Amino acid sequence: MIRQASIEDLGAMRRVCVLTGDSGRDATGRWSDDGLIPDVYLEPYMRYPDRLAWVVDEGQGPVGYVIAVADTAAFADWWRREWVEEFVVRHGPVAADEDEAWLFTGGTQPERMVALADLDAFPAHLHVDLLPEAQGRGLGRLLLHTLGGELVSRGVPGVHLGVGTDNLGAAAFYRRLGFDEPAPGLMTSPSERLASA
Ligand SMILES: CC(C)(COP(=O)(O)OP(=O)(O)OC[C@H]1O[C@@H](n2cnc3c(N)ncnc32)[C@H](O)[C@@H]1OP(=O)(O)O)[C@@H](O)C(=O)NCCC(=O)NCCS
Image 1 (cartoon, rainbow, N blue to C red):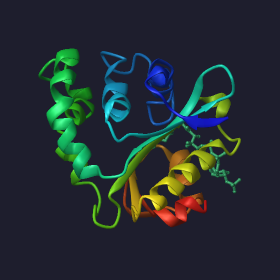
Image 2 (image 1 turned 45 degrees about the vertical axis):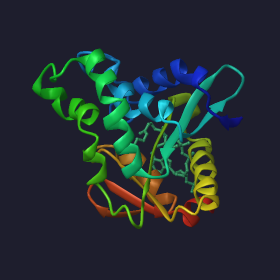
Image 3 (image 1 turned 90 degrees about the vertical axis):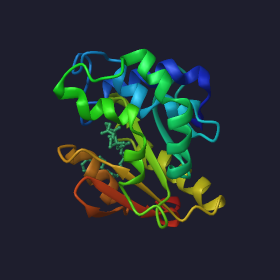
């Protein structure tokens, strides 16, 4: 049911990303281009050579995923070298409007990732999304537990993530799994705690 993601899963994973991309709700039509959100929060993680990615697949293709990188600073360097140009080809050099400026600069300014958390203690970061029909069945917990085991085996001390301050369900989920909330919208966990979640 949970397996490692491959690049062939990207299309289905992009769909999950859009259908959950507006603080957990369907983001279709929310921004000027539905491709924007997966081009910031999904595809670069899948293109990254050292990707950590698992999907939930019950026989019909991915209905959810966790994606992560073990070393956020190294990933930001790679993004600057390898992804910004592709992102600009897809979306242009400037945001289409003010509403999507924050999302857009996520694509063009990867250094933003490096400033979010204490990277000595929590160098990894993750994104997890499940379609509504896959939610509430323990699969989010299982995905994060799987990732936590891999981080522990790699000797990565901790993981962080950003959560929209209006995404109350996701924040409750992370707290339930033992994450701390050192600042609004920032959640952190030692890898070992995640592995035993
Ligand atoms: C957030 C998300 C990943 C959680 O995954 P899930 O499979 O639904 O959660 P699980 O069934 O594994 O729940 C694990 C625990 O968290 C709790 N939990 C999950 N969602 C919750 C919610 N909305 N409110 C309160 N608690 C919640 C569960 O009750 C469960 O606790 P228990 O073990 O004591 O029963 C999933 O709902 C999702 O993908 N949502 C939409 C996309 C999204 O918001 N992603 C996060 C972006 S930061």
